[in-house]
Length: 275
Ligand SMILES: Nc1ncnc2c1ncn2[C@@H]1O[C@H](COP(=O)(O)OP(=O)(O)O)[C@@H](O)[C@H]1O
Ligand SMILES: [Mg+2]
Image (tube, rainbow, N blue to C red):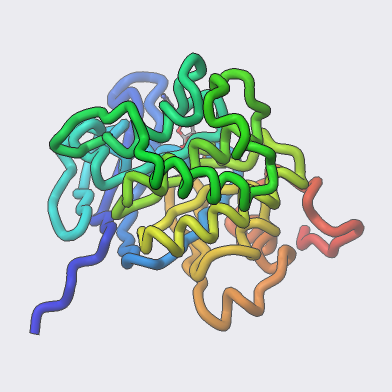
């Protein structure tokens, strides 16, 4: 019996920036990880822990110094990001990245649908597709459904990030990468986009990796929580253990690795932090 390969696998991945120079930085050390289709992993860790480096390695924006990256069992370590684009969708922290400002919502979505298809870009959405888009946009409650022809550059950060998310879903990615994608949003909008994130991840069935510094988000979504410290994975919590964990539990893991917690603002008042 052959097991289906994991949607995403990192095999002893290491990353060094500026190798053999005085400003050398060891960003990742011996990261091994498997994420299955449909699994939703949240990733936390203090500033500089290596979270974005890990996302960059998966997307192909960065080449690991050691180890391998496999998508659906295929070794893509040497594939540049554009060759992985069919299988990977990535949403960044900056809402301006990921959509074309001068294009309308509709054209951005059409562009996403054409991405990676044999037919190249299809600029016009069929009426059926446009109706489906409008429905999905309406469900967000951000008033986007009546603005399909507005340039994306005119939208608020939350509206624009939502369009990026919907575009990510249209690619039907094997792997969905979210790097602090809620960080620039106000709390109410972040909650809406988080709900959208959950439904998109479920719909696409992707292996999802979401980086966040907000521990309530890290605990409130997903099936598995990873903690990083100084380029290493120091905790991997899932199932009942994750459900039972609270913010202080996560902070304790980070602090016990000797790291500072980057954003105490989201901690409950007077929480008992280990010293
Ligand atoms: N382009 C780069 N050149 C040199 N060092 C970098 C670069 N990008 C990140 N680093 C360093 O690598 C380490 C990990 O950074 P990063 O992956 O951005 O962490 P995180 O996303 O967890 O904050 C940090 O020490 C950071 O300063
Ligand atoms: Mg980062």
